[in-house]
Image 1 (tube, helix red, strand yellow):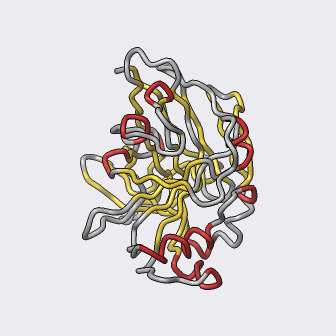
Image 2 (cartoon, one colour; image 1 turned 90 degrees about the vertical axis):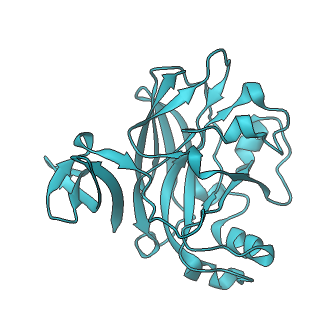
Length: 256
């Protein structure tokens, strides 16, 4: 099932994806039964609130073609950085591009949502600890980049730089998360295509790897990296990052 968190008429609601005017997922059926078209809602990241700040782990250079695109050798061990919750925004929201920057690019990523406490998990059991998936667009600002292996805070931890959604999709409804097509369009033009099968470090590996040395808690996120095909995003550009069976995340660039 595809779950959403939205604001309608000044109140926060939960709901599920619903057909509207013959289009699948074009509306949300709220918990009170009303069906509201997407454009009439204010969207929140589709994550249930947690009792503690959620950990957000993000992978760098996790697709060999993206590493090649950036003229880097594919990593032999996951390249990981941590993000703050203030980076997260919802579907159809604005991401701010700072004044004066020369290159800001999207990153279409499969986001793993941890479903239960994970510690010392074996690879063969990893999927038991995944609650579901969503789409992330993890923007980066190359102007501020000092080292691709260790992105500094201004590159990846800016407020509004990580749209998430529209849906949280239950893990049981994604039978093979390691065979999903990814794509990005900028103003309707396809600029990026890939498949999760091309990850260097797949979902089971990542659950096992992280849980060896840290506890993963329900609601924590793992952003799994992006394939090649990144381009500069200008103010006014509408970016759609889409993952097969998960959803199409719409975001607009705003000047600051």
